[in-house]
Length: 143
Image 1 (tube, helix red, strand yellow):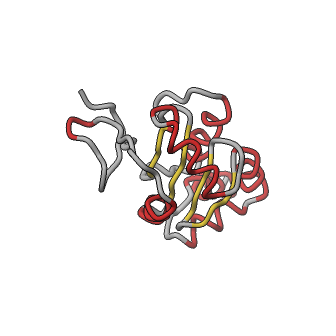
Image 2: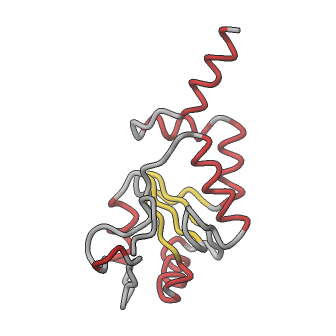
């Protein structure tokens, strides 16, 4: 059966039947393609629907606050090689990891900081993604 939502891999290596893909060998070239394939890419423990750690959950919640629904999410718990490979690729020791437009942004703490200081709204705008928080702010301003 399919795991609801857009967390299934698209592209090379995705298995039929809605399974999350498992990469046999994760080379930096493949990771390069993965992080550049979508505007927003996250590597999580678990899935956006069922995050398996608090930090992954925080990243999912922050993206949800901004109304970012269309992003690629990869579950590193399904694939130890992916889990290690992405840490080597980014030179960042922990999961979750967030990429915007192919650029490594950071983990939960950095995304939270960007969310709090308004940088995330600006970064999303550069990608042509309109943050839902802008609409809420407009509502508050008009009251």
